[in-house]
Length: 77
Image 1 (tube, rainbow, N blue to C red):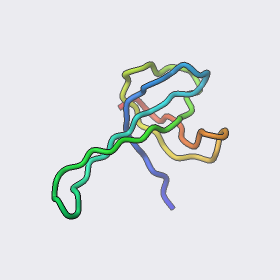
Image 2 (cartoon, rainbow, N blue to C red):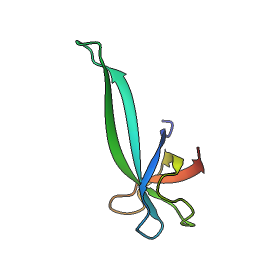
Image 3 (tube, rainbow, N blue to C red):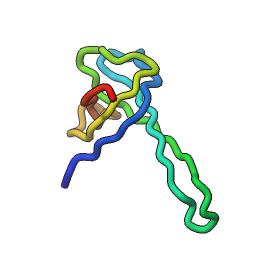
């Protein structure tokens, strides 16, 4: 099964080697046919602490690193 790749904005970099990424997805409502925006936060591993709040990054699924981290940062988008 392929690994998912998501793109989002860094909302927090306060923890060591961890960033919080806000990923927004848009889809059409099945009945109302209106565009709906939903967002979700993911915790991602940032080994060098190189990403700061406001950066746009790509994250990829990986094996669990900690209790909450299942994503790693690939590149800055």
